[in-house]
Image (cartoon, rainbow, N blue to C red; front, side, top):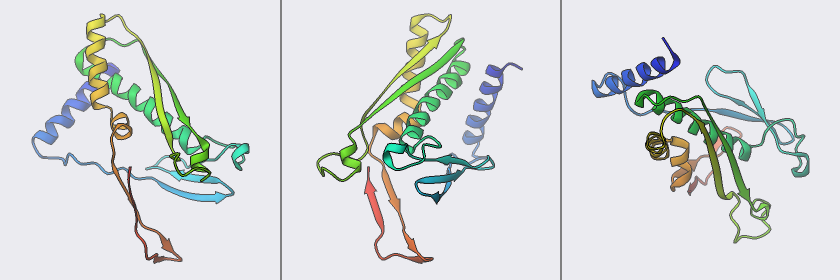
Length: 182
């Protein structure tokens, strides 16, 4: 079985299972993180080996790993590539290669609390998807439309979502509940 056949079969089975109501359509993703030392953090996701996140030297880190803002760009690029591959397989569109170059533009004064009028996150994010395919332009345009409409990370970054958190101090809930609608 080719990788396209495996992808198509898996996705069609998932759709069928949801339609038959044998699986729930809602998913919950989890990650556990822990500050290790300085600005270096350890992250664990599912059964995968722990990986690390850090900041560059000029922001007080050891520059031992990517930083969270870079991981956000990685998430967008890889999600785009995965969704391109998945939809191309299901739509029967041949893909020879897909890569995504992602840039995030940040005014660091917001993160450093130097100017309250500047947001601490990215002001904007841009990407270039590079596709190699023997398909015609009309097929690729249709594929791009599907990816832009259904990429979860693109969607999450493109609309306001609710982000909530709780803080515990020495195992006890702190009084205030953190809530921020992005």
